[in-house]
Amino acid sequence: MKLAVCVKRVPDSEARIKIGADGSAIDGSGVKFVLNPYDEYAVEEALKLKEAAGTGEVVVISAGPDAAQETIRTALAMGADRGVLLRCETLPLDPLPVAKALAAELRDGSFDLVLFGKMAIDDSSHAVGTMVAELLELPCVSAVAHLSVTDGSGTAEREVEGGVEVVEFALPAVVTADKGLNEPRYPALRGIMMAKKKPLEVKEAGLEAGGLEVVSLSHPPERKAGRIVGEGAEAVPALIEALKNEAKVL
Amino acid sequence: MPDVLAILEQRGGTLKKVSHETLTAARHLADGLNGEVHALLIGAAEGSGDGLGAFGADKVLLAGDEGLRDYQADRYAAIAASAGDYPVVVIAATALGKDLAPRVAARLSGALAADVTEVRYEGGIVVTRPVYAGKAVYTLKVTGSPCVLSVRPNAITPEQSEKAGTTDTMKVEAAEPRAKTVEVKQPEKAALDVAEASVVVSGGRGLKEPENFGLLEDLAGALGAAVGASRAVVDAGWRPHAEQVGQTGKVVSPNLYFAVGISGAIQHLAGIRTAKTIVAINKDPDAPIFKVADYGIVGDLFEVVPKLTEEIRKVREG
Image 1 (cartoon, rainbow over the protein chains, first blue to last red):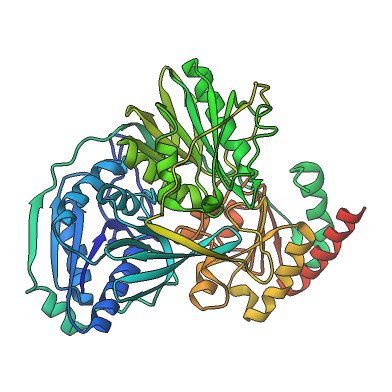
Image 2: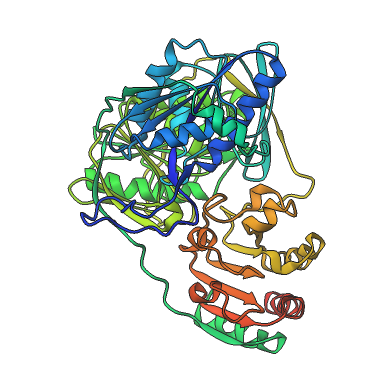
């Protein structure tokens, strides 16, 4: 089974975000970058599918700066076979140019299944995976929390507000992974050592600019400091009073 | 024809509340562009555009057949992309909208501004877009045309704006979806979704045992609220991921948010920043959650929450 997983290098979710001097991007210095958490589920699922098939290849593809090679190596250390970096200095906020570059890379790869995380936790566009599927005219299920693949077809479940959609599709296809799909493995020391020797091809991404122009990037307004209405159950009436008459939300 | 297409969302033939927010955002842009708002309602054939004129729809396009009762992603995308020559498409960033918006953008080869919280026209389309789960906020000019905007639920206040709301039926070609929704499983207990609810009651480690979430379910019941959870308790398997609030869960903007036994990790605080009123109940007076809460009670949640539930019931009944 031939599988591709598209991944992104993102700041760790616990990172404090500083705005850069030009006010249009974050200051990445001192920030810990990681493999996007949702992409870990995608990598894990690809590895499990390859293991179940008994044969195949898992290719990890990322668009990003040179430093994204580390991100690809993390996925290789988990067990993926080889990597491709579509190099670009910065990624546009508009997701379509990235989707086009990935689609071009994937188009002739004869992959049975292409996996993404459902979104990257930095820009949370929730878009690139479904866009790639549309560009390649492939069946696609996004935000998948349960997946089964057998004999050229698959069934996926995705959580929606107040229910779960069960979706059937034929391969080749694209799925984007939600939390709950699996428990990603940690790279073992042996995996980390082996990952260093696995092939990682670097190409220029040649991205279009996209249709969004940054006016500014700022921190959200600080929430006004609130107050402690009291201690213990005795404080409940004061809280109710404040919610009813001050905040007017009850 | 600088008209704006507003893709509305229905479930089981009932229009979702968030559709009025979508229409309001579309109306603002159409007024700036001097165009009309055309509301697209995709679903089973019995769909009705009644009342959409009151929220600013000049025209309602009904597109449907029996096979479109449930969300069929690529068919919905094909219909939306062929509805007309629209420079702007607006949709709610719900589970459906988050899937559909990028598909439509890809088919139109347009720009996508996803999950925006403000939309305005200032000689061009300008949007506000939180990133890093709300730790930073972009103000963006949408230069691409056509463009698709998905709007975060609860971020825009619906406004009435009386328009004609005339109904047109759009011809839909029968097709087999590439990926087919064959079933929508309903949970045994209908639960409100944290991203949609106007009141959310979330619990964390402070609840000590998964069984103790019963206390929060009682409080949520009294408030008509959704139950949410911190990452710690979701990772521990106490609660389903659908309930997780924060950067790796859902970003929420309810009117009222209760954080119960949640200390307030950065990624959780990022996910609740746009809530209108935050209440924290925690035994640790130094918990970071109190720095963002509008109202706090320091104390044992096992005493505070039952009392709170009781008092809320009195308010609601009185």
